[in-house]
Length: 603
Image (tube, rainbow, N blue to C red; front, side, top):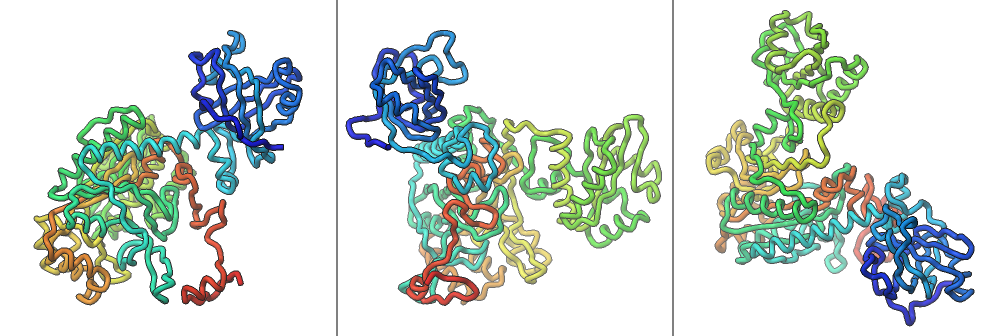
Protein backbone atom coordinates (compact mmCIF):
# COMPACT_ATOMS: atom_id res chain seq x y z
CA UNK A 1 0.00 0.00 0.00
CA UNK A 2 1.45 3.39 -0.93
CA UNK A 3 2.10 5.97 1.79
CA UNK A 4 2.14 9.76 1.78
CA UNK A 5 5.14 12.09 2.00
CA UNK A 6 3.78 13.80 5.09
CA UNK A 7 6.57 14.53 7.56
CA UNK A 8 9.40 13.57 5.21
CA UNK A 9 11.46 15.75 2.84
CA UNK A 10 14.21 14.84 0.40
CA UNK A 11 17.56 16.24 1.51
CA UNK A 12 19.83 14.93 -1.24
CA UNK A 13 19.73 13.49 -4.73
CA UNK A 14 21.15 9.98 -5.14
CA UNK A 15 24.12 11.11 -7.18
CA UNK A 16 25.11 13.69 -4.57
CA UNK A 17 25.89 11.18 -1.83
CA UNK A 18 29.64 10.79 -1.28
CA UNK A 19 32.23 10.19 1.44
CA UNK A 20 31.95 13.75 2.74
CA UNK A 21 28.47 12.86 4.04
CA UNK A 22 29.52 9.80 6.06
CA UNK A 23 27.85 9.94 9.48
CA UNK A 24 25.11 12.34 8.34
CA UNK A 25 21.40 11.52 8.28
CA UNK A 26 19.90 12.06 4.82
CA UNK A 27 16.67 11.34 2.99
CA UNK A 28 16.67 10.17 -0.62
CA UNK A 29 13.76 9.48 -2.96
CA UNK A 30 13.51 7.82 -6.33
CA UNK A 31 12.78 4.70 -8.33
CA UNK A 32 13.90 1.22 -7.40
CA UNK A 33 16.44 0.11 -9.98
CA UNK A 34 17.02 -3.28 -8.37
CA UNK A 35 16.18 -5.09 -5.11
CA UNK A 36 18.25 -7.94 -3.65
CA UNK A 37 16.80 -9.85 -0.69
CA UNK A 38 19.22 -11.73 1.57
CA UNK A 39 16.58 -12.29 4.26
CA UNK A 40 18.04 -10.26 7.14
CA UNK A 41 19.71 -7.76 4.78
CA UNK A 42 17.88 -6.21 1.85
CA UNK A 43 19.83 -4.11 -0.66
CA UNK A 44 18.06 -1.64 -2.93
CA UNK A 45 19.70 0.34 -5.73
CA UNK A 46 17.78 3.61 -5.86
CA UNK A 47 17.74 5.75 -9.01
CA UNK A 48 16.91 9.37 -9.72
CA UNK A 49 18.01 11.72 -12.50
CA UNK A 50 21.44 12.21 -10.90
CA UNK A 51 22.42 8.54 -10.72
CA UNK A 52 22.31 5.41 -8.55
CA UNK A 53 22.77 4.93 -4.80
CA UNK A 54 22.59 1.79 -2.64
CA UNK A 55 20.42 1.70 0.46
CA UNK A 56 20.52 -1.16 2.97
CA UNK A 57 17.68 -2.35 5.21
CA UNK A 58 18.88 -4.44 8.16
CA UNK A 59 16.15 -6.34 10.04
CA UNK A 60 18.10 -5.77 13.26
CA UNK A 61 17.90 -1.98 12.88
CA UNK A 62 14.39 -1.29 11.58
CA UNK A 63 10.93 -2.21 12.89
CA UNK A 64 9.52 -5.51 11.63
CA UNK A 65 6.84 -3.80 9.53
CA UNK A 66 9.51 -1.71 7.69
CA UNK A 67 11.59 -4.81 7.00
CA UNK A 68 8.51 -6.61 5.70
CA UNK A 69 7.74 -3.55 3.58
CA UNK A 70 11.24 -3.66 2.09
CA UNK A 71 10.72 -7.30 1.08
CA UNK A 72 7.62 -6.30 -0.93
CA UNK A 73 9.44 -3.67 -2.97
CA UNK A 74 9.90 -4.35 -6.70
CA UNK A 75 11.59 -2.62 -9.60
CA UNK A 76 10.24 0.85 -10.47
CA UNK A 77 8.48 1.33 -7.15
CA UNK A 78 8.88 4.91 -5.97
CA UNK A 79 10.24 5.01 -2.44
CA UNK A 80 11.65 7.35 0.21
CA UNK A 81 14.42 6.29 2.58
CA UNK A 82 15.97 8.04 5.56
CA UNK A 83 19.13 6.84 7.24
CA UNK A 84 22.77 7.39 8.02
CA UNK A 85 25.40 7.50 5.30
CA UNK A 86 28.08 4.91 6.00
CA UNK A 87 31.31 3.97 4.22
CA UNK A 88 31.36 0.61 2.49
CA UNK A 89 34.02 -1.86 3.50
CA UNK A 90 36.85 -2.11 0.93
CA UNK A 91 35.62 -5.46 -0.37
CA UNK A 92 32.10 -4.04 -0.92
CA UNK A 93 33.07 -0.90 -2.84
CA UNK A 94 31.39 -0.75 -6.26
CA UNK A 95 33.82 0.97 -8.66
CA UNK A 96 31.15 1.07 -11.39
CA UNK A 97 28.97 3.48 -9.39
CA UNK A 98 30.12 7.05 -8.63
CA UNK A 99 28.43 6.61 -5.24
CA UNK A 100 29.88 3.11 -4.83
CA UNK A 101 32.06 3.93 -1.79
CA UNK A 102 29.09 4.71 0.45
CA UNK A 103 25.60 3.42 1.19
CA UNK A 104 22.60 4.35 3.32
CA UNK A 105 21.91 2.48 6.56
CA UNK A 106 18.12 2.87 6.50
CA UNK A 107 16.13 3.81 9.59
CA UNK A 108 12.88 4.85 7.87
CA UNK A 109 11.39 3.51 4.62
CA UNK A 110 8.21 4.39 2.73
CA UNK A 111 6.66 3.20 -0.50
CA UNK A 112 5.30 6.31 -2.21
CA UNK A 113 4.00 4.55 -5.32
CA UNK A 114 3.88 0.98 -6.57
CA UNK A 115 4.55 -0.11 -10.14
CA UNK A 116 3.35 -2.83 -12.45
CA UNK A 117 6.06 -4.82 -14.19
CA UNK A 118 7.30 -2.37 -16.85
CA UNK A 119 7.19 -3.36 -20.55
CA UNK A 120 10.99 -3.25 -20.65
CA UNK A 121 13.85 -2.90 -18.20
CA UNK A 122 15.09 0.54 -17.33
CA UNK A 123 18.79 0.05 -17.91
CA UNK A 124 21.60 1.77 -19.73
CA UNK A 125 22.26 0.43 -23.21
CA UNK A 126 19.21 -1.82 -23.16
CA UNK A 127 17.97 -2.88 -26.59
CA UNK A 128 14.29 -2.06 -26.88
CA UNK A 129 12.17 -1.77 -30.04
CA UNK A 130 11.63 1.86 -31.01
CA UNK A 131 7.84 1.58 -31.19
CA UNK A 132 7.73 0.17 -27.65
CA UNK A 133 10.08 2.87 -26.36
CA UNK A 134 7.89 5.60 -27.83
CA UNK A 135 4.62 4.03 -26.67
CA UNK A 136 5.99 4.06 -23.10
CA UNK A 137 8.17 7.13 -23.49
CA UNK A 138 7.79 8.13 -19.84
CA UNK A 139 9.53 4.87 -18.91
CA UNK A 140 12.09 5.14 -21.70
CA UNK A 141 13.02 8.60 -20.39
CA UNK A 142 14.01 7.04 -17.07
CA UNK A 143 16.96 5.32 -18.76
CA UNK A 144 20.28 6.98 -17.82
CA UNK A 145 21.32 7.74 -21.43
CA UNK A 146 17.98 9.44 -22.13
CA UNK A 147 18.24 11.52 -18.99
CA UNK A 148 21.76 12.59 -19.98
CA UNK A 149 20.45 13.71 -23.37
CA UNK A 150 17.70 15.77 -21.76
CA UNK A 151 20.21 17.33 -19.37
CA UNK A 152 22.44 18.17 -22.34
CA UNK A 153 19.51 19.93 -24.00
CA UNK A 154 18.96 21.98 -20.85
CA UNK A 155 22.65 22.90 -20.70
CA UNK A 156 22.59 23.94 -24.35
CA UNK A 157 19.60 26.24 -23.73
CA UNK A 158 21.45 27.93 -20.89
CA UNK A 159 24.73 28.23 -22.82
CA UNK A 160 22.95 29.91 -25.75
CA UNK A 161 21.03 32.27 -23.49
CA UNK A 162 24.14 33.29 -21.55
CA UNK A 163 26.22 33.96 -24.65
CA UNK A 164 23.58 35.90 -26.58
CA UNK A 165 22.50 37.89 -23.53
CA UNK A 166 26.13 38.86 -22.91
CA UNK A 167 26.34 39.94 -26.57
CA UNK A 168 23.41 42.34 -26.06
CA UNK A 169 20.65 40.23 -27.62
CA UNK A 170 17.09 40.43 -26.31
CA UNK A 171 14.95 37.29 -26.06
CA UNK A 172 11.55 38.11 -27.60
CA UNK A 173 8.67 35.69 -28.11
CA UNK A 174 6.83 35.74 -31.44
CA UNK A 175 3.31 34.42 -32.20
CA UNK A 176 2.51 30.74 -32.57
CA UNK A 177 -0.82 31.42 -34.28
CA UNK A 178 0.03 33.33 -37.44
CA UNK A 179 -0.78 33.76 -41.13
CA UNK A 180 -0.32 30.98 -43.67
CA UNK A 181 2.52 31.59 -46.12
CA UNK A 182 2.17 30.79 -49.82
CA UNK A 183 5.87 29.83 -50.03
CA UNK A 184 7.87 27.10 -48.31
CA UNK A 185 6.76 23.76 -46.85
CA UNK A 186 3.15 22.87 -46.06
CA UNK A 187 1.71 24.65 -43.05
CA UNK A 188 -0.08 23.10 -40.11
CA UNK A 189 -3.42 24.91 -40.05
CA UNK A 190 -5.58 25.81 -37.05
CA UNK A 191 -9.24 26.57 -37.68
CA UNK A 192 -10.64 29.77 -36.20
CA UNK A 193 -13.92 29.52 -34.26
CA UNK A 194 -14.53 33.26 -34.31
CA UNK A 195 -13.80 33.60 -38.04
CA UNK A 196 -15.58 30.60 -39.63
CA UNK A 197 -13.82 29.24 -42.70
CA UNK A 198 -10.58 31.03 -41.87
CA UNK A 199 -7.38 29.53 -40.48
CA UNK A 200 -4.27 30.36 -38.57
CA UNK A 201 -1.00 28.62 -39.44
CA UNK A 202 1.59 27.34 -37.00
CA UNK A 203 4.92 29.05 -37.80
CA UNK A 204 7.50 27.29 -39.95
CA UNK A 205 9.90 29.87 -38.51
CA UNK A 206 9.60 33.31 -36.89
CA UNK A 207 11.13 34.82 -40.05
CA UNK A 208 8.79 37.71 -40.76
CA UNK A 209 8.28 38.63 -37.12
CA UNK A 210 12.01 38.84 -36.44
CA UNK A 211 12.39 41.09 -39.48
CA UNK A 212 9.62 43.28 -38.10
CA UNK A 213 11.52 43.41 -34.80
CA UNK A 214 14.53 44.78 -36.69
CA UNK A 215 12.28 47.46 -38.20
CA UNK A 216 11.05 48.13 -34.65
CA UNK A 217 14.57 48.96 -33.48
CA UNK A 218 15.35 45.80 -31.50
CA UNK A 219 18.65 45.39 -33.30
CA UNK A 220 19.66 42.10 -31.65
CA UNK A 221 16.95 39.45 -31.18
CA UNK A 222 16.97 35.79 -30.27
CA UNK A 223 14.47 33.14 -29.35
CA UNK A 224 14.49 29.41 -28.61
CA UNK A 225 11.21 28.43 -30.16
CA UNK A 226 9.08 25.64 -31.58
CA UNK A 227 8.54 25.57 -35.36
CA UNK A 228 6.22 23.38 -37.41
CA UNK A 229 6.36 21.93 -40.91
CA UNK A 230 3.93 19.49 -42.45
CA UNK A 231 6.44 17.49 -44.47
CA UNK A 232 7.49 13.89 -44.91
CA UNK A 233 9.75 12.79 -42.09
CA UNK A 234 13.30 11.43 -42.14
CA UNK A 235 15.73 10.49 -39.39
CA UNK A 236 16.80 14.14 -39.13
CA UNK A 237 13.34 15.72 -39.50
CA UNK A 238 10.34 16.15 -37.19
CA UNK A 239 7.00 17.92 -37.79
CA UNK A 240 7.66 20.10 -34.73
CA UNK A 241 11.20 21.03 -33.87
CA UNK A 242 13.14 23.48 -31.72
CA UNK A 243 14.95 26.36 -33.36
CA UNK A 244 17.58 28.74 -31.98
CA UNK A 245 16.59 31.88 -33.87
CA UNK A 246 18.67 35.04 -34.15
CA UNK A 247 18.56 38.31 -36.08
CA UNK A 248 20.85 41.38 -36.10
CA UNK A 249 20.66 44.85 -37.62
CA UNK A 250 23.39 46.91 -39.30
CA UNK A 251 25.41 43.81 -40.21
CA UNK A 252 26.81 42.07 -43.25
CA UNK A 253 27.57 38.39 -43.83
CA UNK A 254 30.92 38.45 -42.04
CA UNK A 255 29.33 39.89 -38.88
CA UNK A 256 26.73 37.12 -38.71
CA UNK A 257 29.26 34.37 -39.39
CA UNK A 258 31.72 35.72 -36.83
CA UNK A 259 29.09 35.91 -34.08
CA UNK A 260 27.85 32.40 -34.75
CA UNK A 261 31.35 30.93 -34.81
CA UNK A 262 31.92 32.42 -31.37
CA UNK A 263 28.54 31.09 -30.19
CA UNK A 264 29.35 27.59 -31.42
CA UNK A 265 32.80 27.73 -29.83
CA UNK A 266 31.20 28.53 -26.46
CA UNK A 267 28.55 25.82 -26.88
CA UNK A 268 31.14 23.14 -27.70
CA UNK A 269 33.25 24.15 -24.71
CA UNK A 270 30.28 24.32 -22.31
CA UNK A 271 28.56 21.13 -23.47
CA UNK A 272 31.36 18.87 -24.74
CA UNK A 273 34.43 20.47 -23.16
CA UNK A 274 35.96 20.66 -26.64
CA UNK A 275 37.93 23.61 -27.98
CA UNK A 276 37.01 23.96 -31.64
CA UNK A 277 39.20 26.03 -33.98
CA UNK A 278 37.84 29.22 -35.48
CA UNK A 279 37.31 30.72 -37.98
CA UNK A 280 35.52 27.88 -39.74
CA UNK A 281 36.51 27.04 -43.32
CA UNK A 282 34.28 28.68 -45.95
CA UNK A 283 33.42 27.39 -49.39
CA UNK A 284 30.84 28.61 -51.85
CA UNK A 285 27.85 26.53 -52.86
CA UNK A 286 29.35 26.07 -56.33
CA UNK A 287 32.61 24.75 -54.86
CA UNK A 288 30.76 22.44 -52.46
CA UNK A 289 28.85 20.86 -55.33
CA UNK A 290 31.95 20.51 -57.53
CA UNK A 291 34.05 18.90 -54.77
CA UNK A 292 31.47 16.90 -52.83
CA UNK A 293 28.24 16.82 -54.85
CA UNK A 294 26.46 18.19 -51.78
CA UNK A 295 25.72 21.55 -50.19
CA UNK A 296 26.23 19.96 -46.76
CA UNK A 297 29.42 17.94 -47.22
CA UNK A 298 31.01 15.76 -44.58
CA UNK A 299 34.62 16.95 -44.65
CA UNK A 300 35.97 14.41 -42.15
CA UNK A 301 37.20 12.38 -45.13
CA UNK A 302 38.33 13.10 -48.67
CA UNK A 303 37.03 11.11 -51.65
CA UNK A 304 36.24 14.32 -53.52
CA UNK A 305 34.49 14.32 -56.89
CA UNK A 306 36.52 14.75 -60.08
CA UNK A 307 35.15 16.04 -63.37
CA UNK A 308 36.41 14.00 -66.35
CA UNK A 309 34.02 15.43 -68.95
CA UNK A 310 36.91 16.97 -70.91
CA UNK A 311 38.73 13.62 -71.02
CA UNK A 312 35.81 11.55 -72.36
CA UNK A 313 34.08 14.07 -74.62
CA UNK A 314 33.96 12.73 -78.19
CA UNK A 315 34.10 9.07 -77.13
CA UNK A 316 32.04 6.28 -78.64
CA UNK A 317 30.54 5.41 -75.24
CA UNK A 318 26.95 6.56 -75.75
CA UNK A 319 26.13 6.83 -72.04
CA UNK A 320 28.88 9.40 -71.52
CA UNK A 321 28.44 11.22 -74.80
CA UNK A 322 24.66 11.54 -74.58
CA UNK A 323 24.97 13.07 -71.12
CA UNK A 324 27.60 15.56 -72.33
CA UNK A 325 25.61 16.50 -75.44
CA UNK A 326 22.57 17.18 -73.24
CA UNK A 327 24.56 19.64 -71.15
CA UNK A 328 25.43 17.20 -68.38
CA UNK A 329 28.77 15.92 -67.19
CA UNK A 330 30.82 12.84 -66.33
CA UNK A 331 32.24 12.79 -62.81
CA UNK A 332 33.44 10.24 -60.33
CA UNK A 333 35.09 9.34 -57.05
CA UNK A 334 38.05 7.11 -56.22
CA UNK A 335 37.67 4.76 -53.25
CA UNK A 336 40.95 3.94 -51.59
CA UNK A 337 41.20 0.22 -50.86
CA UNK A 338 38.09 -0.61 -52.88
CA UNK A 339 39.86 -2.40 -55.71
CA UNK A 340 39.07 -5.83 -54.29
CA UNK A 341 35.39 -5.01 -53.90
CA UNK A 342 33.37 -8.08 -54.94
CA UNK A 343 31.16 -7.76 -58.01
CA UNK A 344 28.04 -8.22 -55.91
CA UNK A 345 28.93 -5.14 -53.88
CA UNK A 346 29.77 -3.16 -57.01
CA UNK A 347 26.34 -4.04 -58.39
CA UNK A 348 24.79 -2.86 -55.12
CA UNK A 349 26.49 0.51 -55.58
CA UNK A 350 25.11 0.71 -59.10
CA UNK A 351 21.62 0.16 -57.69
CA UNK A 352 22.26 2.83 -55.06
CA UNK A 353 23.04 5.33 -57.83
CA UNK A 354 19.82 4.39 -59.60
CA UNK A 355 17.86 5.41 -56.51
CA UNK A 356 19.02 8.93 -57.28
CA UNK A 357 17.79 8.67 -60.90
CA UNK A 358 21.22 7.91 -62.35
CA UNK A 359 21.14 5.40 -65.20
CA UNK A 360 23.99 3.49 -63.59
CA UNK A 361 27.69 3.63 -62.82
CA UNK A 362 30.81 2.78 -64.78
CA UNK A 363 33.83 1.61 -62.83
CA UNK A 364 37.55 0.95 -63.00
CA UNK A 365 38.92 -1.48 -60.39
CA UNK A 366 42.67 -1.65 -59.82
CA UNK A 367 43.93 -4.85 -58.19
CA UNK A 368 46.96 -4.74 -55.88
CA UNK A 369 48.83 -6.61 -58.61
CA UNK A 370 48.20 -3.76 -61.02
CA UNK A 371 45.58 -5.65 -63.06
CA UNK A 372 42.70 -3.49 -64.23
CA UNK A 373 39.04 -4.52 -64.51
CA UNK A 374 36.57 -2.09 -66.02
CA UNK A 375 33.30 -1.73 -67.89
CA UNK A 376 34.94 0.80 -70.22
CA UNK A 377 37.62 -1.29 -71.95
CA UNK A 378 35.56 -1.57 -75.18
CA UNK A 379 35.30 2.20 -75.57
CA UNK A 380 38.59 3.62 -74.29
CA UNK A 381 42.21 2.77 -74.99
CA UNK A 382 44.60 1.77 -72.22
CA UNK A 383 46.20 5.21 -72.51
CA UNK A 384 42.85 6.97 -72.12
CA UNK A 385 41.96 4.85 -69.11
CA UNK A 386 45.33 5.59 -67.54
CA UNK A 387 44.71 9.30 -68.05
CA UNK A 388 41.44 8.95 -66.11
CA UNK A 389 43.23 6.99 -63.37
CA UNK A 390 45.94 9.65 -63.14
CA UNK A 391 43.34 12.44 -62.78
CA UNK A 392 41.90 10.67 -59.73
CA UNK A 393 45.32 9.86 -58.31
CA UNK A 394 44.15 6.25 -57.94
CA UNK A 395 46.64 3.54 -56.95
CA UNK A 396 46.69 -0.27 -57.15
CA UNK A 397 44.02 -1.47 -54.72
CA UNK A 398 41.60 1.40 -55.46
CA UNK A 399 38.34 1.58 -57.44
CA UNK A 400 36.92 4.48 -59.44
CA UNK A 401 33.16 4.95 -59.89
CA UNK A 402 31.94 7.17 -62.73
CA UNK A 403 28.49 8.67 -63.30
CA UNK A 404 27.18 10.50 -66.37
CA UNK A 405 23.91 12.47 -66.44
CA UNK A 406 22.48 15.90 -65.72
CA UNK A 407 24.67 17.65 -63.17
CA UNK A 408 22.01 17.53 -60.45
CA UNK A 409 21.62 13.75 -60.82
CA UNK A 410 25.39 13.18 -60.96
CA UNK A 411 25.90 15.23 -57.81
CA UNK A 412 23.11 13.45 -55.90
CA UNK A 413 24.25 9.96 -56.90
CA UNK A 414 27.96 10.50 -56.22
CA UNK A 415 27.29 12.32 -52.95
CA UNK A 416 25.28 9.33 -51.69
CA UNK A 417 27.92 6.91 -53.00
CA UNK A 418 30.67 8.92 -51.31
CA UNK A 419 28.94 8.65 -47.93
CA UNK A 420 28.29 4.93 -48.37
CA UNK A 421 31.89 4.23 -49.33
CA UNK A 422 33.14 6.22 -46.35
CA UNK A 423 31.10 4.03 -44.00
CA UNK A 424 32.72 0.92 -45.48
CA UNK A 425 36.30 2.01 -46.14
CA UNK A 426 37.14 5.07 -44.03
CA UNK A 427 34.58 5.53 -41.25
CA UNK A 428 35.00 9.04 -39.84
CA UNK A 429 35.65 9.47 -36.14
CA UNK A 430 32.24 10.29 -34.59
CA UNK A 431 33.96 12.48 -31.99
CA UNK A 432 35.55 14.69 -34.64
CA UNK A 433 33.66 17.94 -35.22
CA UNK A 434 34.26 19.40 -38.68
CA UNK A 435 32.46 22.73 -39.01
CA UNK A 436 32.11 24.40 -42.39
CA UNK A 437 30.38 27.44 -43.87
CA UNK A 438 28.73 27.03 -47.26
CA UNK A 439 28.00 30.45 -48.76
CA UNK A 440 26.60 32.13 -51.89
CA UNK A 441 23.71 29.77 -52.49
CA UNK A 442 21.59 30.21 -55.61
CA UNK A 443 18.92 32.82 -54.93
CA UNK A 444 16.38 30.98 -57.09
CA UNK A 445 15.71 27.48 -58.33
CA UNK A 446 13.59 26.63 -61.35
CA UNK A 447 10.75 24.12 -61.26
CA UNK A 448 10.21 22.52 -64.66
CA UNK A 449 6.99 21.01 -63.31
CA UNK A 450 5.52 24.40 -62.36
CA UNK A 451 7.39 26.36 -65.05
CA UNK A 452 8.47 29.03 -62.56
CA UNK A 453 11.21 30.03 -60.16
CA UNK A 454 11.03 29.47 -56.41
CA UNK A 455 13.15 31.09 -53.72
CA UNK A 456 15.93 28.70 -52.77
CA UNK A 457 16.00 29.96 -49.16
CA UNK A 458 12.94 32.20 -48.79
CA UNK A 459 11.61 35.25 -50.68
CA UNK A 460 13.20 37.70 -48.21
CA UNK A 461 16.83 36.77 -48.93
CA UNK A 462 18.97 39.49 -50.45
CA UNK A 463 20.87 38.87 -53.70
CA UNK A 464 24.61 39.42 -53.97
CA UNK A 465 25.24 43.03 -55.08
CA UNK A 466 27.21 41.80 -58.08
CA UNK A 467 24.18 39.78 -59.26
CA UNK A 468 21.40 42.35 -58.84
CA UNK A 469 21.63 43.16 -62.55
CA UNK A 470 20.85 39.51 -63.35
CA UNK A 471 17.72 39.76 -61.25
CA UNK A 472 16.71 43.07 -62.80
CA UNK A 473 17.18 41.68 -66.33
CA UNK A 474 14.24 39.31 -65.97
CA UNK A 475 16.10 37.02 -68.38
CA UNK A 476 15.17 33.44 -67.47
CA UNK A 477 18.57 32.18 -68.63
CA UNK A 478 20.29 34.56 -66.19
CA UNK A 479 17.96 34.40 -63.19
CA UNK A 480 19.18 30.94 -62.27
CA UNK A 481 22.73 32.31 -61.99
CA UNK A 482 21.78 34.86 -59.33
CA UNK A 483 23.56 34.22 -56.04
CA UNK A 484 22.13 34.96 -52.61
CA UNK A 485 23.66 36.39 -49.48
CA UNK A 486 22.77 33.08 -47.87
CA UNK A 487 24.91 30.78 -45.76
CA UNK A 488 24.64 27.44 -43.98
CA UNK A 489 26.64 26.13 -41.06
CA UNK A 490 27.47 22.48 -41.73
CA UNK A 491 28.69 19.94 -39.17
CA UNK A 492 29.83 16.46 -40.21
CA UNK A 493 27.57 16.36 -43.23
CA UNK A 494 24.49 17.93 -41.64
CA UNK A 495 23.18 21.45 -42.03
CA UNK A 496 22.76 22.61 -38.43
CA UNK A 497 22.02 26.24 -39.15
CA UNK A 498 21.10 28.47 -42.02
CA UNK A 499 20.44 32.11 -42.66
CA UNK A 500 20.93 35.10 -44.88
CA UNK A 501 21.17 38.83 -45.17
CA UNK A 502 17.60 40.00 -45.78
CA UNK A 503 16.08 42.35 -48.31
CA UNK A 504 15.57 45.68 -46.51
CA UNK A 505 14.36 47.86 -49.41
CA UNK A 506 10.76 47.88 -50.60
CA UNK A 507 11.73 48.14 -54.27
CA UNK A 508 13.98 45.06 -54.07
CA UNK A 509 11.29 43.08 -52.25
CA UNK A 510 8.77 44.02 -54.95
CA UNK A 511 11.25 42.85 -57.60
CA UNK A 512 11.76 39.57 -55.79
CA UNK A 513 8.04 38.87 -55.62
CA UNK A 514 7.67 39.79 -59.29
CA UNK A 515 10.50 37.40 -60.22
CA UNK A 516 8.75 34.62 -58.32
CA UNK A 517 5.60 35.17 -60.37
CA UNK A 518 3.61 37.06 -57.74
CA UNK A 519 1.12 39.59 -59.01
CA UNK A 520 0.91 42.82 -57.04
CA UNK A 521 -2.36 41.53 -55.60
CA UNK A 522 -0.75 38.18 -54.60
CA UNK A 523 2.11 39.96 -52.83
CA UNK A 524 -0.23 42.22 -50.89
CA UNK A 525 -2.52 39.35 -49.97
CA UNK A 526 0.29 37.27 -48.52
CA UNK A 527 2.69 39.90 -47.21
CA UNK A 528 0.95 43.28 -47.03
CA UNK A 529 2.11 43.88 -43.46
CA UNK A 530 5.77 43.33 -44.39
CA UNK A 531 5.57 45.47 -47.53
CA UNK A 532 3.95 48.25 -45.53
CA UNK A 533 6.58 48.01 -42.81
CA UNK A 534 9.42 48.25 -45.35
CA UNK A 535 8.22 51.80 -46.16
CA UNK A 536 9.10 53.11 -42.69
CA UNK A 537 12.86 52.89 -42.41
CA UNK A 538 14.33 49.39 -42.39
CA UNK A 539 17.93 48.80 -41.31
CA UNK A 540 20.12 46.31 -43.19
CA UNK A 541 19.76 43.07 -41.24
CA UNK A 542 20.39 39.36 -41.29
CA UNK A 543 20.45 36.33 -39.07
CA UNK A 544 20.73 32.63 -38.68
CA UNK A 545 18.59 29.87 -37.19
CA UNK A 546 19.85 26.57 -35.80
CA UNK A 547 18.07 23.25 -35.55
CA UNK A 548 18.66 22.62 -31.85
CA UNK A 549 17.48 19.01 -32.04
CA UNK A 550 19.93 18.27 -34.85
CA UNK A 551 22.82 19.77 -32.87
CA UNK A 552 22.00 17.52 -29.90
CA UNK A 553 21.70 14.51 -32.23
CA UNK A 554 25.22 15.13 -33.53
CA UNK A 555 26.69 15.93 -30.11
CA UNK A 556 25.33 12.68 -28.63
CA UNK A 557 25.91 10.46 -31.67
CA UNK A 558 22.21 9.52 -31.72
CA UNK A 559 20.84 7.83 -34.84
CA UNK A 560 17.67 9.91 -35.04
CA UNK A 561 16.06 13.11 -33.80
CA UNK A 562 13.56 10.86 -31.99
CA UNK A 563 16.32 9.98 -29.53
CA UNK A 564 16.93 13.57 -28.46
CA UNK A 565 13.35 14.91 -28.17
CA UNK A 566 11.39 14.13 -25.03
CA UNK A 567 8.13 13.28 -26.80
CA UNK A 568 8.78 12.90 -30.55
CA UNK A 569 6.61 11.93 -33.48
CA UNK A 570 7.30 8.93 -35.74
CA UNK A 571 7.64 8.67 -39.53
CA UNK A 572 3.94 9.19 -40.24
CA UNK A 573 3.89 12.24 -37.92
CA UNK A 574 1.83 10.40 -35.30
CA UNK A 575 2.53 10.14 -31.58
CA UNK A 576 2.55 6.53 -30.30
CA UNK A 577 2.27 7.76 -26.70
CA UNK A 578 -0.86 9.90 -26.97
CA UNK A 579 -2.27 8.38 -30.18
CA UNK A 580 -2.34 11.82 -31.81
CA UNK A 581 -3.66 12.88 -34.23
CA UNK A 582 -7.13 11.68 -33.33
CA UNK A 583 -10.74 12.28 -34.30
CA UNK A 584 -12.65 15.05 -32.60
CA UNK A 585 -16.32 15.40 -31.74
CA UNK A 586 -18.94 16.53 -34.21
CA UNK A 587 -19.73 19.36 -31.79
CA UNK A 588 -16.16 20.67 -31.99
CA UNK A 589 -16.31 20.66 -35.77
CA UNK A 590 -19.66 22.46 -35.78
CA UNK A 591 -18.23 25.19 -33.54
CA UNK A 592 -15.41 25.65 -36.05
CA UNK A 593 -17.74 25.62 -39.04
CA UNK A 594 -15.98 22.59 -40.48
CA UNK A 595 -17.63 19.62 -42.12
CA UNK A 596 -15.46 16.49 -42.13
CA UNK A 597 -15.48 14.32 -45.22
CA UNK A 598 -14.10 10.78 -45.64
CA UNK A 599 -13.20 10.57 -41.98
CA UNK A 600 -14.72 9.54 -38.69
CA UNK A 601 -15.71 11.85 -35.87
CA UNK A 602 -16.73 11.21 -32.31
CA UNK A 603 -20.42 11.95 -31.97
